[in-house]
Length: 217
Image 1 (cartoon, rainbow, N blue to C red):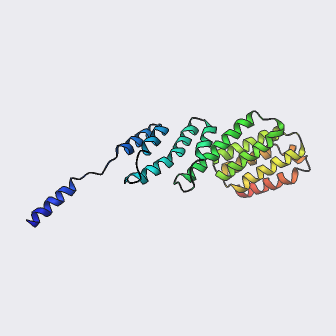
Image 2: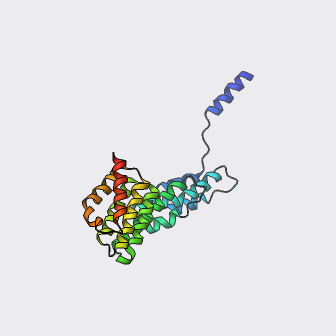
């Protein structure tokens, strides 16, 4: 009888299924469909006494990240920035949210740069270059070199030219991407005479060229 009961017990456990919760499942479905507020309302229906409560809290905390990424992909950078800023420090998505925040900020600055005047241009270039350096993204670093080139072409003073050259130096010093180094070197060599004639700029250009040639050897 005991053996029979044991077998029956095994059969009973083997036939059991994972517990489900209607609100939790509905919330997951809404979240996957991009219905973020609907998803949160379903998750909030789950009471603290439910075994699904910790998961529901975790899913609610994922909403700002998912909303932010969706907005970023739609090129709604301001909205993305607002939502991604709400991702809590303890969230497993926090590091990735910070990366998207930087990218959103970069794109917003770039939009400003397209409409900028000489007065604001250097500050915007500097901020975008700093983001590129922080992210270490090759595509952004190459764009940074292009931004600096644009700034140099429109530079209105020797001091501004020097500051932009020093900014270019920071890009190549902080990053080891050969493609970035080659692009910077090609630009400096092509415009070498123009920079060499400016005594305030010359030593910085010579130093960067020397460093780049050493790196690319």
